[in-house]
Image (cartoon, rainbow, N blue to C red; front, side, top):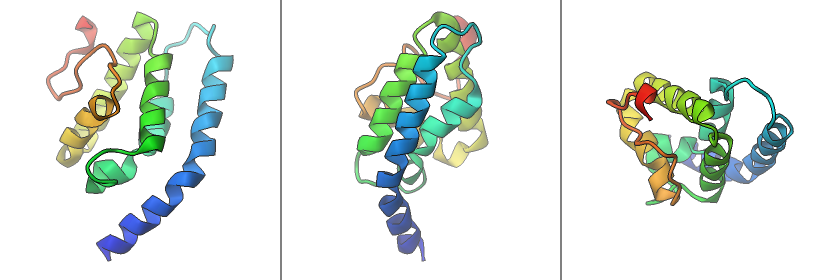
Length: 128
């Protein structure tokens, strides 16, 4: 049954690309807004990595849609205030999905993206 879920998630990845592009476009339109990035945006971007987080697939790296989302996350976290907000949201995801904390923590690195802070349960987002 687990293999069926993995196959289902893998087959849905191409359909997620338009969602990622829509999030990117929305964020670019809101680029001048004062509010920090919200956790709903971070969750939406990280959700493209759900197969990797849950099952370690595509193996051994997250895959293009996920890495595109990590690149987008890096772009929207450009001002320091937004970077701290992204950090806090990712720490919330790590705490909520603690069995999958390692997978979440490795996403940016596997994708060759530096978010400007380390993703680990011990990261203090106030000091980035």
